[in-house]
Image 1 (spheres, rainbow, N blue to C red):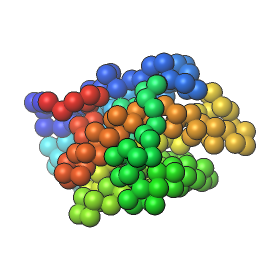
Image 2: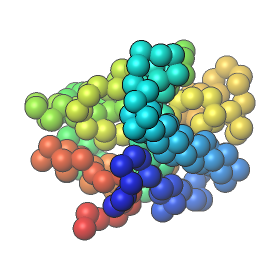
Image 3: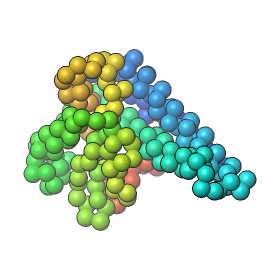
Length: 220
């Protein structure tokens, strides 16, 4: 636990995936370095805001205003990447139609395939951002969202279950910027999705609890 009054996050090294199919080590290394940048920026900006507070500079000035506007962008960039990387692993089979997890998706989307189709089609939309499957804790309903940048469309209090990065940096090194490259990336992403992790997140979300971002196996 941090002993300073501002953010002091660390890069969650245990979340870095290896040996993925269709997503090269070079791509993951480059993408991971961007995640590290978000962690560093969260710590830096939060400290700068704290210093403004201590020095009595909390005025409607451009520097302070821009720090506050940027803070949510950096925080969400850090958190979404942790959910993204934390659910990538090679060799985890997709849940069968009769599995509890597939039935959970079917409850809100009609079928597991319907969920996957909608999730993928959202990811193919023009723009930079994320696709998320989240749960409304008040109804336990699963909903797919498009999130622009990191924060626009990221619904407050909804619990993240599946999180896919569709910024160009998530795939362009392996697939380029040609037509159809994002579609191929989405197929690779789904092929590397750790369904065991998704099931754990879902189980906690059903209890209105959020899976800890720094864990890859079990809750302590």
